[in-house]
Image (cartoon, rainbow, N blue to C red):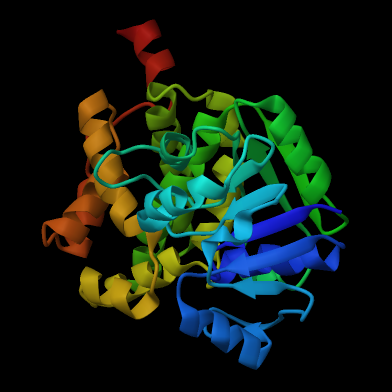
Length: 337
């Protein structure tokens, strides 16, 4: 049995807490929002964000972040915009024998840093592990079989998280490419937003298949430019996470995209849906693509829609009428240039 403290009482944090509790671990869930914790105590579930998933009385609920003391695993289930602050507040209570696990998928907007980089800057004395992959909270909390990946520069820490959290409904693979795992998890939200827009406009499976396939291509291009391994994007944190986020109504990014495709203003769509990581991630990815000179046409067109008042139908037309290319451009040009 391990002592697991989950920072964040949102859907994914609570789903992991329920899963860990079901398999015999000593679990605490923390939130800085007193009303959120009181509501879970009263209702026996996270009714607002994870309805129908019961939170056992054996799961301790806390609003004092010192609850991380003595933990084996400190699991961050925090939206990316708040990870640095929570990490800074938790740092005094985290010791070298603990392992910090991040589940957030995105970049810090101002710095373009990955979440493991943010955590490493604020928590300097404990190993950082990224947990990512196709894992809707709604299904994890209900015990529906799910497979994810953990990655870290500290192999011992990654193995420990795998051993502790792996069970008959939650299978964990290891990957030594933490850069690729984090980038895949972040950038798939951009493609899911775009996919939702096409759904909202009434386009079909052909369009979605094209977006997903060309989307993973540009995700991989940026990832490799940032130091990731190409192979990672063919796995669970690449194409796996992309599939689940682009095709499911559990996906807040897809739902926000549907609203935009139906004519709702991007800011209003995000407001209606809640946390939509792809919104801020699109801005960071677009800026990174320009900095690193990486071609990302889908990201570029989404950026124009979200932040420059671009027209949705025109954006799709711009993608469809780009100059003709070979699908594997590098191979083609090297042979026939």
